[in-house]
Every structure is written in C-alpha cells, then in structure tokens.
Length: 636
Image 1 (cartoon, rainbow, N blue to C red):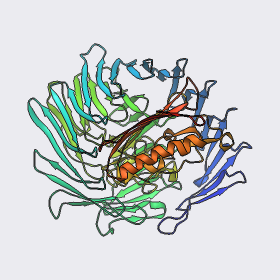
Image 2: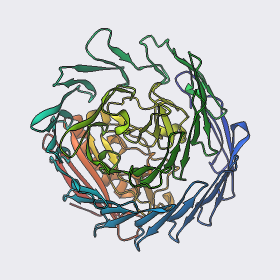
Image 3: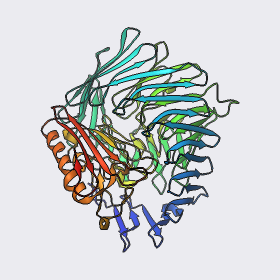
Image 4: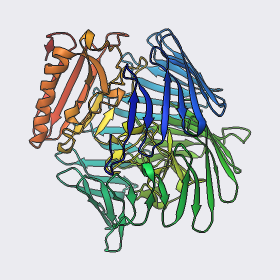
C-alpha cells in the first residue's frame, strides 16, 4: 500500500496468509511469531521491545507480558466470556447472570450493579459509592426519562421527547431549564434553543450545504457568525468568526498532515506524519513513534513516558513536577496523580461513573458522580453541593451547565482543533470535550481512552494502536471534519450520522442506527477478513460476514459491531442487498433516511435468526421488513 507521497506500508505473510512482518510508512518494523494454530505468541517491536502472549485452548488471550516487566491477565467462563482481568494497578471482576449479562462489576474494592428488564435493557445502575440511576424508554428504545441521586440526596430528573426519526426535540431539566432542537427535511439540526428562568440563554442556528457540511453557525443572542470552509475532499480546512483576519486554518497536505496557515509552511513533519516542529515548539519521539519530549521556544521542556503496553504513564512538566497515570487492562484510566491530588476513577462500562481525590480520608465530600446518555454524552454532574444539568451541542460536546435553580454555572465553546476558546465558570467544572475526551489541565492533553489528544496541535501524541484500520487522516491524526466526525476511543473515526450499538454479553452485535444522507453513499468499507462474527463458520458453511449497515450506505466493515453471520445466498445477497439498494436509490434521489438494522437472536445462539430493517425517508419512503436468516425465507 502506498500513500500520496509514494511511501509504502508493507505486510509480509506466511503460507497460511497470516501477517508475520509489518513495515510502516516510517519504516518502523514489527515481526510476529505465531503458534502452529496461527495465534500470535510474541510481537518483536522496535527498540528491542516486545510483547508475549499466552492463550487458552479456545484461543483467548489469558496473559500478556511486556518488556518492562508489566503484565496483564484474563480469565473467562466456559462460554468464553470475560470474568476477571488484572494488572499491577487494578483487578476487574465481572459477575454475570444465567444469560451472560454483567450484573455486577468490581474494580478493586468498588462495585457497579446493573438491573435489566425482560428485553435485556438496563434500567437501573447502583454503586458502592451510593449512585442510583434509573432509565425509562419508549417503544423505539429512546430514553424518555433519567433520574439520578446519591445516597440520601434529592433526585435529579431529566425528561426527553423525540421526533419520528428518533431525534431529540425537547429536554426538560431541573430549574425549568428547557432545551429544544429543530431539524430540516434532511434530518440535520438547524436550531438549538435553551431557556431558563423564562429567558433564552442559548440560541444557535446551523446552516448546511448540499453535501451535508456545516457552513455556518450563528449565535442569535450575540449576532456572532462562524463560517467554515472545506477542500475538495470535504476536509474542514478553516473557520472564520466574521473578519478577514479572523481565519483559523487547519489546512491539510496530500497525506493528511495539519497546518495552521493557508500556505502550509508553519509546521515540519517527519516520516509517518510525526510532527517535528511548529512555530512554538520542537517534538521528539521514541522508536515506536511515541512523543517523548516537547521543547517550547522559551526553553520549557515537557517529557513523556509510557508503559510497555503503550499507555501514557507519566508527564514531567517544565517545573520538574510529575503527573502519573494508572489504567486497567481495558484502557480505562483509574488514577491520575500529581503533587496537588490523586484522583481515582470508577467506571460504568465505557464512561466514568465516579471520581474523587483518594488522598483524602473519605471519598464522600468531593465525590463526583457523572450521568451519561446512551453512549458518551454527559447529562449531569452530581456532587455533595448539588446537581448540575449538562447541555450538549448536536455533536454531543458539552456546552453549558445549570444548577438546580436554573442558573448557568458553566459554558464553553471549542474551536476547530477542539481547544476551549471561550468559557465561563471554572474551565474544568465539566472536563469532557469531544465525545470520549477528558481534559487534563495539568498537561494540556485530552485523555481519549487508548491515546491522548493534543488540542494545541490537533494530533494525537502516539500512532494509532490499530494502524490503518483506524481510518483517520494519518496515524497521528484526529478526524477529517470535527463538525460531524468523532473518535470515541482514540482508535477510529465515527460519523455523527451512524451509531453502532455495543456488543452484548456474548460478543454479538446489537444493532445500528443511522441517518443516511447522500454524502454517505458508497463510503463504507468491505468486511475485514480479520473479523470473525459470532457463529461464523466460513465460506464452506455458506456463511457471510454480513453488514448491518451496508457498505453502499456508509457502513464499516472494520467495526465488529457492524458485522453478523448471515447465510450468504440468498440472505446476504440478493435478499438483504435488494432492500439496501432500494434505500440507496431513495437517498440518491434526495431523501434523507432514518435507518435501523437490528439482529434477532434466539437465546444464546451466536448467529442471528433474522435481521429487522426499518427505514423512514423525509419524502415518505418507508421500509419495515424482517429477513429470516435461512434459505429462501423472508417475511414482511
């Protein structure tokens, strides 16, 4: 594979097709030692570094050892479901019910307990630190009410309403705070209005072009208008706040490197898109492409150190003080320590539930409980001093917070690099930035699960752990258009139009929701041969790696949440494909389609017995069909 500058990314395979050697754009080389069964037993990494793996009889990794004497262990039940995982910092234990759902998770001495309804939807979360969160849903699965309390405190409540496409149109919060959204015929947000204490506190108008790119955002309360510009590849390349000298550039060269000038002359990049020099600083990297030093023009020097698994372990600031980090084996940060304090984090799945200063005698006085929507959008902050409702923009970025009386206590606006350009209140009162990001004021970096994002540069400090599969502009790059794209885990970009449901307790995909617009047609990717969906028996079994959201509709073939095992002929093709082609044609003819694909499982079967497709178009198109996953069976 060659990039736009002619540099090669090379893969060497053995006679079975397994990768045994990898050479990157920057000539960084890794070799893979495999067992007779093809399992990776050792990775030989640059700089005499290595990773060694042990597996059980089913091929599951049960231990990973690293060159720096750190380690990770994993144990599973008879069905291959994770039960316990540990490293030097934390032991995570999962208790499951008879169907495999996690009903209790232990993180060292702290636990989170979950309750489910008869459909498997979680409706209550409690914790050892006193959290009590409940969720109610409508028949479409949208959250209509959330409540949260801590110990004996009063309850925080939010109520939501949706349009026929499942988009939120109203949210009612404590203190008579009301958030309302309006959308155009294509399903794009056009107006956001927040009222509190009988007056407007936020009014934004969004204008989109025919290619579904955000062209302007107007603050109707101040009259300030921000406009946006794009190149021919739909990369967001500038923003302007009203004047000829108010341009903020994020220009892109042929391989995706960012520059802050139109001429692209203000930065120097090395092999593999490593940022070496800006007008403010010089950067150095280790043999694996990890940022290890930043020297600012005034002489201030920042140093960065890493664990054997690649996670950032320490930042040494110019004044020689240190900020250290600890994680569990799932990449979740469980501790951040500095001279001032040592913050502990307790997680609920992929989002933070609690944080507190572990240096204090009790967690109670400064305990913070975070309440999230489905996914990564925060809804509330619960503390001993009160409850605070969080308002987010259309992308899920927090922009305002209100107390119980409806007083605005915090607000923030980000520029096109994700930097906080304006704020009121304490900047870190709400530390979440783009979805999946948590700002560390001590370092200036955003923790983004498996990597750290540097908003000053617009890049990550490390290469993508999953390499080219990340689908980002470069191996260090964020996303091509931060007005519509996200990177939730620091691994791969996700369109704001597509929501992949999380894998269930058996590792099975649970469904995909998407708002399909014309710019998405044909932008998906083929199913990766490295992904084996649950129940997949290969071509000899007549199986196909079936997309829930089709490639022709923008669905990813590199995301395991989008691939299920389907009977190749006729289910995957032609039956399912015919419906997908119908949706494609409707979208190409000008309609925007709200689309859902949900696999149906019998008990603990790994292969779905069917897939339900439902779609509604802005011009009247409607589809509601269940495709049975066996030969010649389809019912409407």
